[in-house]
Amino acid sequence: MSERLSITPLGPYIGAQISGADLTRPLSDNQFEQLYHAVLRHQVVFLRDQAITPQQQRALAQRFGELHIHPVYPHAEGVDEIIVLDTHNDNPPDNDNWHTDVTFIETPPAGAILAAKELPSTGGDTLWTSGIAAYEALSVPFRQLLSGLRAEHDFRKSFPEYKYRKTEEEHQRWREAVAKNPPLLHPVVRTHPVSGKQALFVNEGFTTRIVDVSEGNDSNLLIVFYVQIMPDDFVMQLHRF
Image 1 (cartoon, rainbow, N blue to C red):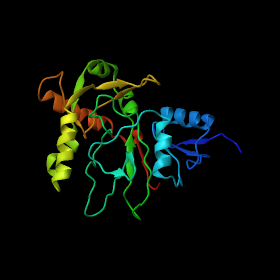
Image 2: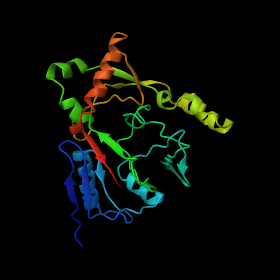
Image 3: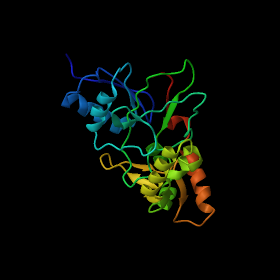
Image 4: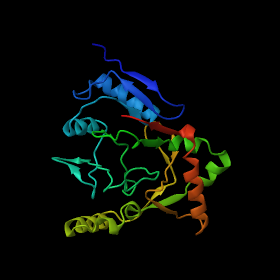
């Protein structure tokens, strides 16, 4: 049996589909190396028809590095590293804007593995965009302007208190999360530690302000950033998992 994965780019800047891997079994070192480099190159990759368990999903994720346990989202039974997103009419999406996951911690995760279990017959698509492509599309003078700028990221922007008052237990978990995750600063432009590529690192989900520019101008600059990451060429949309 061939260990060669088939990797098909889905767009000029972001996205690839991978076939030839069975995630219900541990990938060989060779296959994982191919997967790892595909993620580095394409930023988001899709593997269809993978009926993996939460335990198998965790095992794959652990090969990429240390895992994060989310402070407020519900976890998969017995697998705290996996969160369960259950969106329906009585529980609409709570973070439906452009965001990078978990930028409210000092060392944000390098990525995430999403396994779709139940899907609507239409809609419900997830979209990804490339902060690398957005940065590289900026003019050289504008890139120089951004050098050294820092932005504040705040857990409470995407997880406001009013959403976590259904029970005292839920509210207490939220209070503990806020105490453990105070607002912090990240560079506006981050350099990937492996690829060396630079990317815009601000997002509507958690970024509250840019601290190194005057008040008012920081809001205008954030609007420019958010518009910059949205061109269709930079966005990957997979209609059905």
